[in-house]
Image 1 (cartoon, helix red, strand yellow):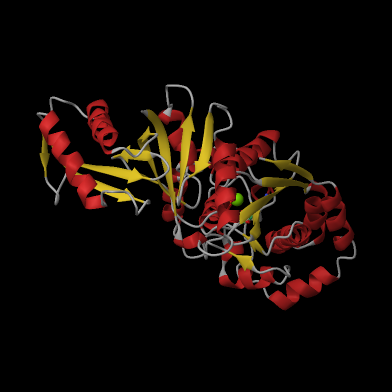
Image 2: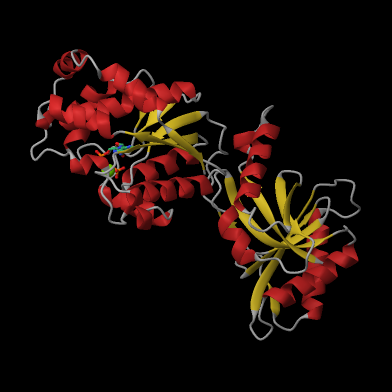
Amino acid sequence: MRNGLLVKYGEIAIRGKNRYIFEDKLIEAIENNIKDNSNYYVKKEQGRFLIANDVDDFDYDFIIPKVKIIMGIVAVCPCAILSNNDINSIKESSLEYIKNNYNKDKNYKFKVECKRSDKNYPLNSMEISSLVGEYLLENTQNLDVDIYNPDIKLFIELRTNTYIYSKIIKGFGGLPIGSSGKAMLLLSGGIDSPVAGFLMEKRGVEIEAVYFHSPPHTSERAKEKVIDLAKRLADFSGGVKLHIVPFTDLQVKLYERVPTEKLTIFLKRAMIKIADKLAKQNNCQAIVLGDSIGQVASQTMRSINAIDSASTSPIIRPLACFDKQEIIDLGRKIGTFDISIRPFEDCCTVFVAKHPETKPKRNIIETMESRIEWLDSMIDEAISNIESIEL
Ligand code: ATP
Ligand code: MG
């Protein structure tokens, strides 16, 4: 009997003819997340994956946190693997599993639940469950049957191998990455945008991220923070490409050219124009922002209205209706918050006006923008100097 990890994924989400593509993508994401330890391999197993190794020790503390966070994974279950379907071996292994995983000095109520994929197997699921149950009762002092309210639900799955497990550790669920296309996320070093990226990933959208870097107004460490946030987003998906745009020249020129109270809107439109071009170059179908309605001046309904015409791609704001506290709570849960609160400024806080306009008029902004004769060429210049990294 060996140890392994059964991985359950949302089957409904990947029904149909693309099933194999999504299964392969999920496996790729798992392999990528566990590649630091080459002893482990992933195998498809009839609607599940099995992660196993050929050495004796299975390092659950290393594997579980890296696997359960991948989008599309519903649950992971540490299991005992039995390489045959023989009923006597199943009985003995079940007993061994209970002895290995539960305290013999404590009393437990238990129930056995069996599933078999081979319908020609001589015993049906109910028969296997009751045979194993009887065997456990006969060979232990601390177990009692309770099918309604058990402390231990012992699952036995007869597939290529037999799997025995009782612990189900929930994942985020959602849809497998890539099953819903791709989007370009504007990722700042703040609290909000990584959470917005996570929510897109949860719906199966592959994320590329773009960060606007303004040295010397923003430090190298601010950039490192964004890289760490992108790495965290990559943990949920198996990989994220991050584009770092040199933004200083454009920012300074806009600062000199437009009224201070309108600067944020112009900067944001410039970022979105760049993101839109990048999105097209990289086959992304939408742009994603971490905006939450009313949070700051550039996120009022009027500002949103004045900003969106900068893009030809649809703009999605997953956090539009979240309160700040809700965003923080989710950021904590997914491990981005602690990275976000490292104290390095992002570019907008350096160039921010004391009294930014909260009710910009879209047509006025558009007219003013159309008169900036160098804007398009500077946008192209910024794009041609992008540094892209795979995380
Ligand atoms: P966040 O916490 O995500 O930084 P915020 O509350 O600081 O958001 P803003 O600075 O107005 O709000 O930014 C709103 C959104 O614009 C961000 O969520 C992000 O999507 C995008 N954004 C802002 N600054 C940058 C930047 N330097 N690089 C990339 N995206 C940015
Ligand atoms: Mg910010």
